[in-house]
Structures are given as C-alpha cells and as structure tokens.
Image 1: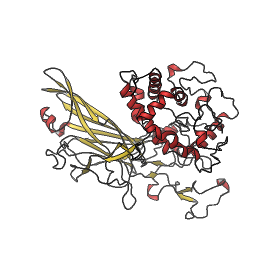
Image 2: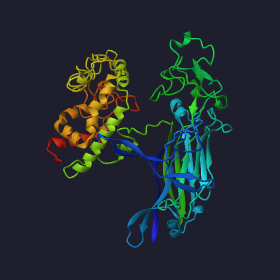
Image 3: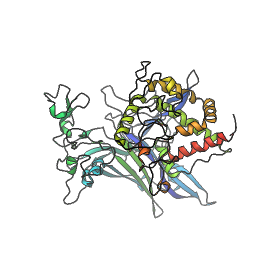
Image 4: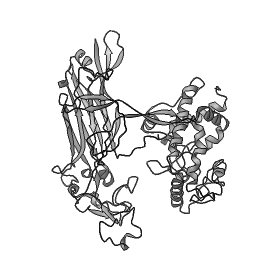
Length: 549
C-alpha cells in the first residue's frame, strides 16, 4: 500500500511564446553535434510532441520539420504541457517514491477525475508596476474540474476599488490564452507504446500576440525611418512610411483616463523601473506613454486533489513572452542557472569531483562561444562605451589594475587584458568605433572565432586554462556581491572579488568576459555567483596540478 504525500507538476516552470496560429510549435531539443573539423556546436533534434484532438485526447508524434509560421504568416505559439506527479510513501517500510498520476496510480489510490481540479490565474502587471496603480494591471482567472476537457479561455480585466480607474473593463477583456485538461486514454498509441497517455496533463496555450490601447493610440512616428527632431517633422500621410499603426481599430478598447496614460519616465512622479524606456511612447516627444499594453502574461497553475479528508495541491508557473527564437545558439546561462545561483549549494571542486566539474566548465565555454558568435561585438562595444561616457560625465574613476572603459577598450592599449585581439584587428586605434585599418566591417566580431573556436575542444580548453589560469582570472568579470559582502561605506576602488552597485567603476563596461553585454538592470553582465566561484575554484585546482588527462 502507498500513501499520498505530495502532489507536484513536472515541469514546475515553463516558458510560452505568443502566436496567432491555431497550431502550436512542435517540440525540439538541444543536443551537441560535431562538425567535420571536430568543433562542437549546438544542433536541434525532434522530440516527442502531441496533437490534441477535438475531445482533448492526445496523439503522440515525432516532428519531421521545424515550422515557425503558417503560409499566411501567422506565428505558431509555444504551448507547454504540464504533467501531474505524486510523491508517495510505502506503508510497509516508509520509503518514498515518485510516480506519474496515471490510471494505475489513480486506481490504487481510489481516485477519479472528479477528485481533481485546477485553478489558473494569469496577469499582466507591467503598466501597474510602472504607475504604482493596481488598476492598471489586468488578470484572468478560471477554475476547471478534472473531468472537463474543453479549452477554457483566459479573459483578463482590471480589478479595482472605489476611486480607481480600471485600464481594462470586464465588458471588453483582453484574452491571455487558454488552459485545458487533456483527456486521459487507457490504451497506448501503437506507434509510441512507451508514452503513457493515461497520465494527467494540462496544456497552457498563450495568446495571439496582440497589442491593445486607448482610442488615441492610432498612429505614431516610425523610429526606423524618422530622423530629426519630432517637432519639426511633418507627417503628411500614414502610407508614406513615416508613421505607423500603433493599435488596430478593434483593439483600441482601453480606458484613456488612467495613470498609465499620464505616465512618463524621469519626470520624478514614478519609480521608473528598468529598463526605463520599455514602453510605447518612450523617447517620443515628452515621453508620455501611449497607454498601450500587450497580451503577454505570467500565469500560476494550481492543481488540487482531495484524498482521505485532506487536500493536496501542486503549483506551476508559466512565463509568456514574445516569439523570438535562436534554435542554433545557446546563451551561456539561463533561468536554470539563475535558480541554482539562488537555491543550490556551491559546486564542490576537488580532485574527486574533477571530472564532473570539468564537464560543466567545458559546457560553459562552449556556450560562451555560441553566444559570442551570435553577437555583433562591434555594435555592443560602441553602445557600451558610449554608455560609460554618459555615466562618468567627468567623474574620476580608478584605472589602476583595471581594463579601459573608454576608446582604448579591447585595443592594443588595453593591456594585459587584450593579449590577442590587437593582432586580430590590425590598425585598430583608440576609438569607440571599430576602425580596423584592414577594412573589416565588423573587426571585433570577425575576431571572435579566432579567439574562442579552438576552446570548443575539451583538451585544448583544459590545457589553456592550466597554462593561463592567472590571465583567465583577470578576464572573468566578477558578479555582484550579496548584501553581507558589501562594506558599510564603499570606496571608489572596486573589490576584486565582487562588484558593488554603489561603486561607479563596478557599473562600467570593459572587455572582461562577457564583454559589453548587459543584464536586466542595464549594467555589465557577468557569470552567476555560483558559476564564477566554480571557475575560480577550478582554476585553483588546475594551478595546484589537478589530474592530467
């Protein structure tokens, strides 16, 4: 006999992407491949996908092509599935085990679909966060019984109290997608006998990717084509390419008498969350918001089951974003690394764990190359150095023992950090622009393969780290420290172990790795604290004579 201890979703977190096509994107997975020359790179391979029938049942498939759009241009959304699992305890020996909530387990626990339910709450609170007014956000909420296999739409509107003006009215809600319990099937599919179709699954389907606004959000300046001061330009006709459609007529449904329609960054009246200009209307005229929102959202799924007089719940979260894809490039870290940085213990780096840590380091450097190879380093460098100049504004910053933050950055003058790039960009002068005398259009970007590609090979990378461990230490930008690390009164000179957001030099871009990239707060990006510590400990181990291959 087994007792139910806990209910949980797998995965507990997923990312969805908006799209207007009724057919969601098929599943693919990242894998490593090898070119004929032996360099490792990311490849994608088809993974188990499901077609949803009219009755909510599933048919497993293996896709044969990767298709992002329909012939009419509509984008296929990313619509994740969530499996319901249980943690159980055996009554004979007290041991714990995990199992899918499927027909076998439900029969053993004497459960039916009627014992289950799910509650889904989806919200877009971006305008509320900017204005500090909850009525500028909008939320949808549905409850679905376990034996209800129809898709349920998430129609969002603004919750408000007396004296608050709602941005979205209940009469004209904004659709944020739908959620659906899949219908369990007792018999497996003949082509995929290993797939358990009797397991309880939910699917979250995001919205179409629409924008909504008040009646005045009709046409606006096209920043891709308009040059010169806006108050001197004449917009003669909406078809001439100088202005563009902001919100189509049928979506101009929002209340124009809310704080969001009066929002403007840097006027001292609002908190101005970063990035400050991340709203429609920023950098146009007086920076007043056009009052426009989209149908992305965050959603929480909470499933529950009643068993032997107790209620058990499982929760999962969905983040809905725009349809941007880069299937042949991996970032050097993602949400998983951020969560590990917050919750997981430090990586133990010893002679006994050398092989497992080495594998993580190799993967990190391969992903660093893939990120760098997809980046316009020249443009990123120019923007970063211009940003430095604006931040400094005549304030002296320490230069001793630190890379350059001006036009000398990543040039021959930026020693000892730039030990190879100078020879790969001959004639590069001290400038915020890429001006290599060789005539390369993107001289810094074109140098990336010569610096990083050879480090894709494990043996070459480990040899490099063993020989150049001190140089690598210098090149790795330290992460921001935790509050207990900070000095009560910071000085002007940075701490070499970590960065402090109160120290100006710690907010300036330089060529340390990763160079000229920004984090969510628009300041120089670094590895996570956990990754950085792993790298430092691994370099210590190599310097002390770690096991050779």
